Each structure stands twice: as structure tokens, then as C-alpha cells.
Length: 133
Image (cartoon, rainbow, N blue to C red; front, side, top):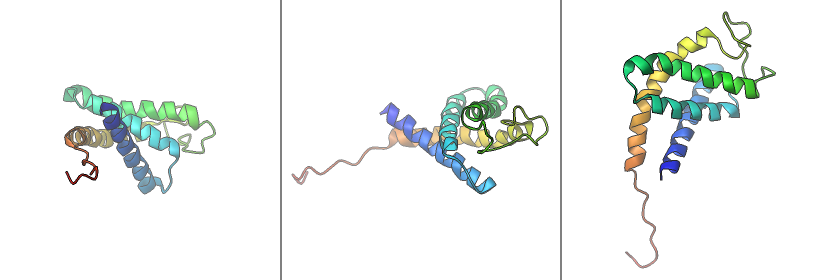
């Protein structure tokens, strides 16, 4: 059950990430679904930490996942390209987007425990085995 719950949470996070990218840029990439899922799961773990820890670390988690994803799948800058942004690192991450991750990470860390609780309390409907019970 725990694996199914984590898989569902990862898929929800991936879907949200892709949805935000579609709203922001008008396009996304399949790798962003995976990156968003990983970010959401990591931020979910971080959501249990004290505010003094989670608030500054949230955006850094997203930035680290973005850098890792970029180094793996964005070597040709076809997914995103921050080379023109001030303070960028290898065109994969930049301070401007790290700052934008603050509100996103806070929202994710507030949403994660609620969704986790909802999924924990969810009961699969029983299948009718044809006996009328």
C-alpha cells in the first residue's frame, strides 16, 4: 500500500509540475513529469521538518532536481535554456528560478501532507463477486 501511495503522490506532483510549465511556458517535456514527481516526494519528506529548515531548503531541493535533470536530459538545451539568465550555472539553473521555487515549494509542502492523509484514508471499493454481498 505504501508503494502505491508514494507512486500516486509522485504522479500527482509530476502532473502539477507539467501543468505549471504548460501555464508558464506553453510547453513541457516528459522529463519534467519525472522531475516534478521526485520534487514532490522530496518536499513531502521535508514538510515534516521545522520551518527554519524547510523554508530555505525547499527551493534548493527543486533547484538540485532541476540541475540533475538538466545534466541528464537537457544537454542540448532543447527542454529549457537559462544561458541568457544572470547567474546561471551551465544554462541549467539560475537564481531567478530558484527564487520562484520559494512559493512553489511552500505550496507543495502544504499540499503533500493533506494528499498523503487523503490517500492513507482512501479505501478501495469492494468488488462484487456475484454473490450479492
